Image (cartoon, rainbow, N blue to C red; front, side):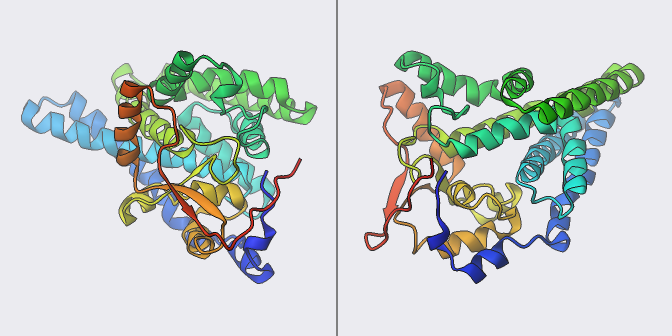
Length: 320
């Protein structure tokens, strides 16, 4: 972890870590958007309308539901840092609920995600693929798996790895949530017609899978894991993309101050740009993907992005 208290003053840090349910409310609009998108998919799929109407309508609903599910994941991620709500009970309850349409248990994800934060780029970072192999070809394959089917593999691997690394109380919570999710899924898929569950609950997960995977790869893929300021990226897309991704594009900023809620990350970014000693940044997600596929063709595994430096600043120490 990076010890970075010198980058912010005490008052600035206090203000940026303040939680606000009013600032959180706009993100919760993704819940009715998900329901509406799934409903549109079901209506379009089951209607007898012309394909010229049915296919565009289904695609729009699919994209809306998929984007909403990707936002659910980001909000559950907020829960792992206790920034969804001031009450720990409410924070966990909201995060568990958000995980239901993602087929993901909150505590399992929290155990591994906090391990990632505590060991960013190190030997115990579960998201650092160099910890699993030194073979360049295998590393490229792992990056491609992350981009294509990573989210689906993680659904299986996360509970297993979290059980291995979790404490006794965390294992108990993991077991409780697995039982809860299994009961809910058995009831939902046993009751809903196949056409409804497929179009409303399963196919939108494909869109969410690509959005989540591309976001995760852009945050940490082809960085410098040995340097805490180059092991994650600050991504600076257009304002509408930033809002859709709930400011998660400011990922270096998030690693420096994980307790800052998403609606204050843009303010944090503006403060840190002149204060951090260096930072790895890119202008957008598509920009990254184009260079990622070019790097596959050439075998170039060097850092993708621009390194912004402030020579007058001294890098903070990395904690042990």
